[in-house]
Length: 385
Image (tube, rainbow, N blue to C red; front, side, top):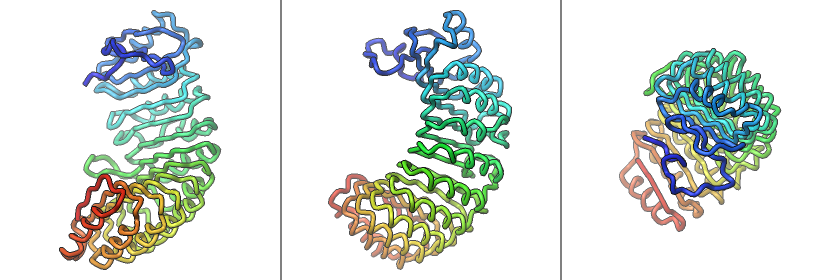
């Protein structure tokens, strides 16, 4: 699908405050100026041609002021592509936003290393989004490492890192350690879980790494959005969840939280109860997503603790709970959750997945739908019981 740009939609009025899209399909420059935005997402785009194009048009690296560099991988993406992309990034010294999506491509530590080294020149960077999920040849997060580069971004506000693959516990701890100086962070997205249906290797991230992450998180007093995905990592236990809970309860600025620990079989009721005790303190939270799908040791006690905490979230507008196939959850836990939902009058959207859990009567299932329909502010619901 061809992306919409100023090149293929000539009648579109350009917003003077929005940087011009300069490199688009067919390697044409649309509107040369001193402010540029690179948007590379054509599968046949050759980054070496882009480098040559910059030379032909006499665009000196010192004169280029890219606001955004966005790269979507194509069929030919490999380490050599990363090397060419790194050369362009080096020219974007004033860029405030960098997005690179290379999900599932045959990139190695060497290719990632090119990127890690090049981003050190982006001293004004405020937003960084790197998606190298399912890149099975990445083992050490680059050489030089991503951790070494992140230490330079004191102004960073948003960070998104997707490295679903075989990442070691030690490498993750180094990465987390590099975040300690970035006090300005407002949005953190970390996806180091393993989606089994996508194939790939399993990380060995453990409680020790989660504990180190927890120690760093409490320093981000301006943090508003947090997304953590450590699905299918069985070395994470209640101990890791408890340390995370202890840290997060101190971040009063949080408005949106997503925690995904699907298929983590070592997480049990005490872990959920600890997490719930933290949740009850975030009275200004507006969006909450908890996914513990196929965690076989979570049962009624965990759901009861969670239900008690939810009643305290008077500003919550969206809730997304996935405890599907948690076989120890029965009528007892579900009835308690239903009672809590009745009191959550601020909810606008509800997403619930409790499929294939323990014994739940038809009566409870019917009451759930009725309770949600009766919420005064409800706009959208999705319920699977």
